[in-house]
Image 1 (cartoon, rainbow over the protein chains, first blue to last red):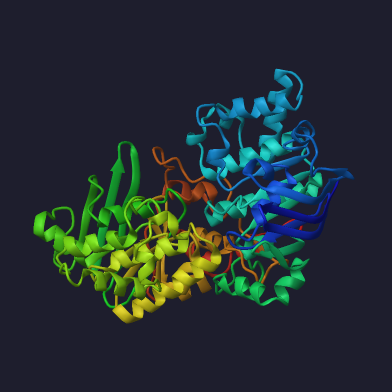
Image 2 (cartoon, each protein chain N blue to C red):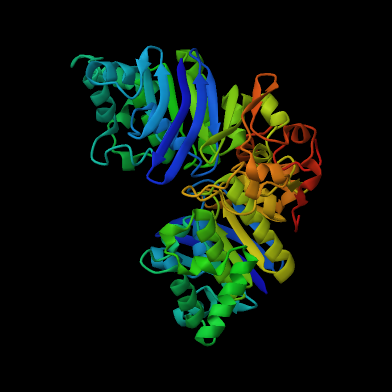
Amino acid sequence: MRLEIDDLRVSFGDRVVAHIPELAIESGESVGIAGESGSGKSMTAMAILGLAEHLGASTAGSVRLDGRELVGAPQRELREIRGRRIGMIFQSPSTAFNPVLRTGYTFAHILALHGGGNRRLRRATAEAALAEVRLTPRVLERYPHQLSGGELQRVAIAIALALRAELLLADEPTSALDVTVQAEIFEIVSRIRATDGMAILFISHDLAAVAEITDRIVIMRAGEVVEAGATRSVVNAPSHPYTRALFDAVPALSGGGADAAGR
Amino acid sequence: MLRVADLHVRFGDVQSVAGVDLTVPDGAHAVGLVGESGSGKTTIVRAILQLAPHAEGTITYDDFQIGRLRGRQLSSFRRCVQLVPQDADGSLSPRMRVGTAIAEVLRTHRLATRRDVGARVDALLADVGLLPEHGRRLPHQLSGGQRQRVVIARALAVEPRLLLLDEPTSAVDVTVQDQVLTLLERLRAEREVSYLFISHNLAVVERLCESVVVLYHGRVVETGPTSSVLANPGHPYTVALRSAVPQLKNSGRRGRLVLHGAPPDPANPPPGCVFHPRCPLAIERCRTDVPLLDDVGGGRRVACHRVEEVLAGALAERRSPLSGS
């Protein structure tokens, strides 16, 4: 899998709200987009999915998935890519699930839409995917309000896994969750990436969170990319003042946060 | 001074808070209350505000006996202790200009006359870094950070001595969080107001609070001065909470203690130590005996049968390296 972005511009009327000169993601890679509210990071995600038009924006430039142009592609074609090849998880898993349907129904319905075999096979696929995110099949009998935010987010990840998505597009997936739950989600996502080679595009305002699970990072402000590069070098030596400001906003923890051996 | 002693709150079969002790001294002292969703943090705040009808135990603030306050006494208590809620958006009327919302508080407590109320509102807005024109706006015309400032200004209107801050920054960007924390640091110094600051992020608590209370499933598992608790936590849960905070300086070379499994079912808590099903150090004793909150020196107290080993670093080598980094 290779996703290539070339001079992508998302605009409302004359106003460009997101401009990505170039960005490429391949299988097994993890790339982050960091920036504040209004920086254009979520609109970039919407444009990749071909959903920016639904929000009233127009998209110009190029987004190619294995050479296939997605900008301007017919919705019929995009529907086969969304969910199936590009999995999605969002900030609020509780609004991503229909509140009056058991999660098992939603899960099976999505598998059926993408041609996931017969009923028994779909159930087996769902159970195997849930095991990968450390959930029991019991969650399929529950309604969304009966599950915690972390559990629902893991069900959403399991749906992407069950469809064998090649790229996981994660827009603030842990911003509404406790840090302990975030740590568990990060562990799961990193493991899936290592074992299945799923690529990750992780979007967040929290630079420390983005830095934690990505190899490359793009810093956006007011629709423009201000800095991009290997996560480690951007974090160790931010060159743009805005990156440094984002950096300084992360509260430091003495005794180390995720420090492992360092005590 | 706020004193909470042996607080229990039960909702039907669910024991939300089970025997919590907590003190917040006067005079610009900040106490952090940390724990996951469902640990009882917000319920404790509601009990302090006399909003949890099923609370048992004693809560006192100076001479006020919370739970029995009525009428004028309740009103004067509310002038001492104010809440800054998590959801600034939900606590402002969408149809009331935010300046009017602040003026309403001043009028209710008879702290301003018709003539000077406008100037008082402007001064409060200025205190939190907003302009008079912001007061003429409706909540949706302000950013999330500005709304959070308005809610802080409204709480300050009665000149309280204690603010209960319920995750005031969990819904905003890190840059806005940084600004709100800077504001809270300044207000504390200028107004000598104390804080009970609720958060699930230990790094935020470290920045603002001298002491910390770690809550798990409605029970205090560790408490003490923030710096020493964070430098060397005594409870495995505190170790996990600390290691869960993403830190820039260490990205790329670290491991962490990740908790698996969910917090216990509140209607059916496990016997013994409530943390034992998720604890990497749990032994037989932890499954049967409830650990007491014992003094471990340095003003610190920990509720763990294996506290000596935890303090000696027993969990350091158990952390798993993050795959893919």
